[in-house]
Image 1 (cartoon, rainbow, N blue to C red):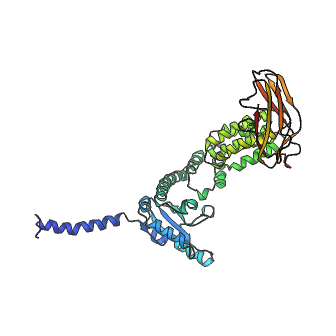
Image 2: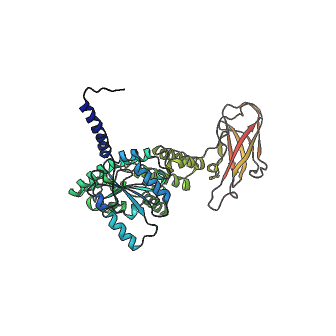
Image 3: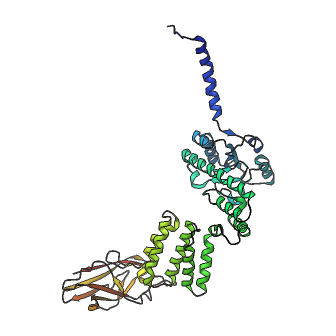
Length: 429
């Protein structure tokens, strides 16, 4: 069969030009790769350098992961015009190997403070050869190339912004320079090795003695606030420590994590020194701490603090350690109480779990403010439960029933005064 082409010359040109264009386009979008800084420097543009680190010689898994990511099209596309470089880290860094690495990677030096703690890892350097970010740890155990690509793309964009701010800061002075340095430190997942937090704070103190920018407060380590509050508490005034933490909460410059720490300080102070009536403040601060960042460690601990330290003594929930910490006064059993009709009622305390028993000395029934019935005897809800049933005889219908229970935990506590006991309360007619 003979095929006919209206223009044989055009047809032959297409057959030649199209493959060439294809090869040219594939070269155009291929990622740049180099083995040494000397090779990489002439190639580097705005997106800088990306080093793929793995343990040299023995860790074949990390090496395969790095090679796979370097060859992945989504990672290459996200990297823009960055230069890819493999970074084998020697298991034992001898002087000879150290010199060899310095010669190979030149200006691409990684400060100890921001070095990855595990491999494989991805290190991003800006166009000036400054280490700006590291992807390592859980992200690299079983890396999803698309997720890694997304992270690289976002971090490269942030690195460019941070680099521009730092370049402005080099030309600025005083408070303006402090403000720019502070802004450069705001980027999530980016580091400033030459201005590690304590160093940056010292620089800011000289540039901005009155902390007009607020960045000295913002960069302050959360544990330093804890130490300051504890010092006030140890001085004998725990309420002053709470007021101090509350003053920090009112300052808009502090970060989410810092504010969570302030709430945690207040919760701890109330738990150690407050009375049961103060438990509502524990709940309030715990809920605020959780609302700031529910998925963080302090956010997740909020529910535990409420469960363990906030008094909730009801038919639905029974008792928790919070109920038994202060046994100086009777505690009201809350919830809908089935004791309005005349008759004999049994109030039973049943131990569920914990290291200590709950010791009951009396159960008293009121109708409004008038005492209706009381059973005062020493009972124990533990292993085993003994004398744990209390009898209340109701002579007439009640309109506003209230039940108060008196505990006595003098013996069932640990050396720190904590009583670990959980149980339920039931009322039968």
